[in-house]
Length: 362
View 1 (cartoon, rainbow, N blue to C red):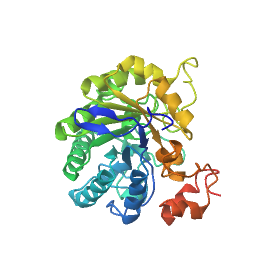
View 2: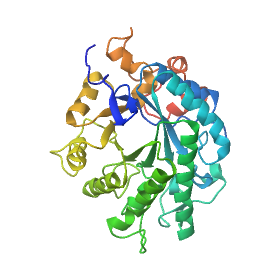
View 3: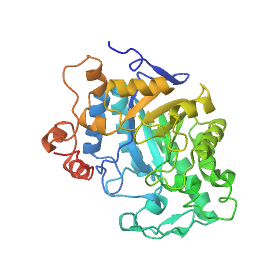
View 4: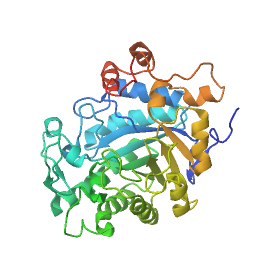
């Protein structure tokens, strides 16, 4: 075994232990049925990674309400009709020895009425090229979405999952409320950081109360990048402290390029800054262009407890086993052929979607 630490277990809470520190990141895969129920294709993709040795398998972003649906083929947790498929998925993942987690999200202004059939709303009526301008959410909208997150968490617990993650990154609804660009409200949900963080904190508290048996994670974008506009590093660190006090057990940092330091503090790495802010109680998992064992080890050295692999897991479903010599084979890096992707349990729809990632598909 070339690196015991990456393959060593990590305790998320008493009685809930990930068998190793290499986890599958939540990946949009366009494979669910149109109504949001689990498909055999999506089950096969996730099961292959569980069989490949990943210690925790996380679903793609799963919408908690119909008005939060952002793309076709998106997994749903918005209705009790989803529970049988979710139960089947959790059981299959756990059969392989991995922990099973669902990422809960609402698209906000990035939800798509042509897909959801429902008008879009967000923190404010933000105009952005290429998107439909959403209406500003009312008090009723906000109360309803908090309840929807809680109901979705209850379904995940009923289905037998080990954990859930709130998607507070990438410019989706929870991130939009945190943003100084997307959130222009003048009421108790906008303005100072304490108000902009109110929604994600209220959602976390409601989810914790609805599903206390589940390990509770939150994914955050540390600072302004891509769709996560108006996100400040120091504000995100403060939000993480508040969420930890509210009951967050795992912080998932979405870094895009995990090897880089922060833009605001070029001398510091985000993982180190959040570890210093949160102490040892909250586990930290880091995602962002981790392809090699050495890159994974570097994140643990920075203070992470685990790493989450996205595109490298698509290309290498047995990544944990290969890099530690437990299975024969070499790691593949892009470009990857369509036939290779099919052999790695990607459906035709998922293969088509991966063509959107420049240079990934040969």
